[in-house]
Length: 221
Image (cartoon, rainbow, N blue to C red; front, side):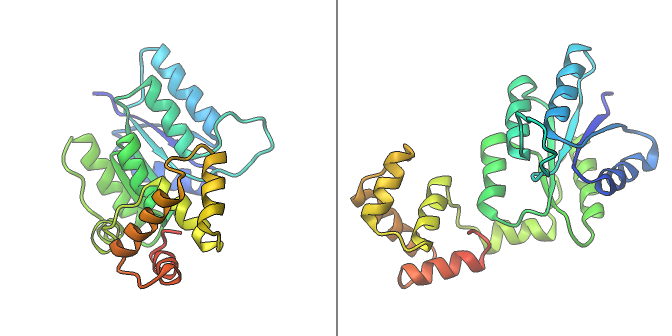
């Protein structure tokens, strides 16, 4: 059985803790990478050697080590790896709390689990690893329960970009110009206004200021 696992995390202490969690029963063959480019190259080489990794456990945020890196975030790493090994299993182990960003990982890359770096995180990670390897539905952690139930409104990257500009006090015409320049569609003023109204209804907000206050409290902005 393929039990190769690659841990991609900038911090040695995190990688070591994850390896210790994996090696409790000497079942897993583990390797680590401190930057996204190195992680990608290890995945690529393993495929070439016909000894591919079964699972990637990756952080989302990596510190700049002043190299000319091609991949600079966990999302970029996951996207690149999925193109060369679509069937690899992925667990994101991160301190990220913005739900739109986490949701996009499930929606866009079909990751297997998200585990929040916090209290009891290694216990939650161990559960996610075990469930991923035995092909069962993974357990839902306390953080994920919060993500999917309390904050069940799903916002898109478009919504997030729109909310960000609204929070900066941009007018409709200014948002339209920015979206058109960045090729973000729809960028018409009427469409933008309709989307803002839709978000107000979704979040039960009285006005734009109230909407921004709500999404900030929820960690969506």
